[in-house]
Length: 409
Image (cartoon, rainbow, N blue to C red):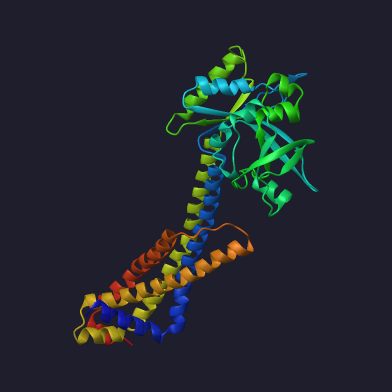
């Protein structure tokens, strides 16, 4: 008997008991749908982390000012201005494979015509765009003359553009930051939220000399201090070695004696982001593993029903063997029935899983990402469940003795 004939017999047998077949497939349907939905949710979370890594930049080290001790109390990181623009240039000059981008931070009300918006502004150098992987969407970036002349020019993030200008092209428009007029020369590509949930597009960028001399002023201008320095290590270079060289150089420049604590803080952002990415990947696998349990339960249901079917159809099996059916024909017939149940349940599970993923994305506003490999994995696993749990009943049926089967009541 061919596999095609076995398939026809199997489908006919399943149609005889439609309700029982449907209830048997329900476990597979739920299992496949759960696997697809959980993998989609986990993959969405992982994709979100990858986007944040990409938006922040690759191979980054964040250099922050150190702490200060006052009255025996140690203040937090950044409580003392210990970093200068010259530190950034020294690192870029003396540490191989490292690019430095110092920045000054400030907050204030940005005014454009009759509209205003409270935002954060950064004074930066041209290296900032490459270090942070930030692309200029329209207009142009800063030129060397803008830094040397403390030019009053600015680039705006997407959120600032939307709140100040709406659909109007902001390039060439004049804005005021702390009563200082700036000409908008460009806009930035969208970056989205940071790992801390902050809107990275709610920002105004200006030359660091402009921020120091025209906006912030005070001791910032005299000492050339900076709020932080982003350091990008070239791809393929050793991050740990670069970090050690940076620490040694800064301790020498700041005259930190042996045994004393650093007056600065180095944070390897790549390690933090890598840990988050690994966590999201583990979560995806965990969700898929939990969902797979329902597939195993569905497989047990298939075995149970197939054993009942063998018992009910014992006389039919004896009759088939009496007219010439071989043991392998009986084995193939019941195995095909089990696999057919699993595959039909798997196909229906795909529909339910896709619908469930869409429902979660819409109602819970979670990001989900359907992957073809998860669909193939779920259906393949369903077929494997059908073979595994259907083999024992099929083998039991194929080993029946025809005379005893015909006498079975």
